[in-house]
Image (cartoon, rainbow, N blue to C red; front, top):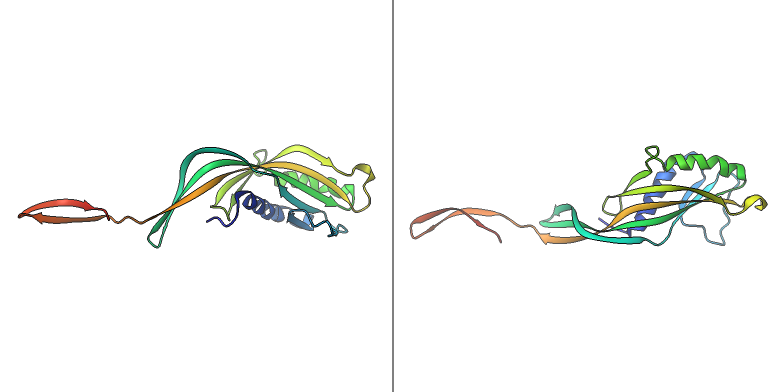
Length: 193
């Protein structure tokens, strides 16, 4: 069941994955940038912040992708659109050497299996699949003149998932029986409520 929008669900899945993969190599993997008044503690390991741009939505013919029956009600799920979500991954570190060290680890975590992009499942948006592909670009915002403790490198990626809609219907019950009309038996009459 969906509890949030698909782009937020994609970010949550990516944050969870990268926290697991980069673990000891970063002090935090966070969704969104810190507030302007918040000073990042970069004395130890780098910090990774992940943000998303506006979704690019491409509508499609509704496609049935699942059904769940509970308490006599069936909920049908349909794919309604494909979504491309631009992702920005910003790494902050106290020195350029730390940015250089985390880069290959981040790229490796984003290529699972190797050279195929990253495949995740959105657990808080209908268990929909998410494919994340990182492009080749990485650029420093601060160059060689960065003040100590404020180095930032940006990587870009794109998450592909889908938008779904649900509809519910009462469970239909099949009733079969035999009825007698004027002493003639009529077998296998089916009644649907």
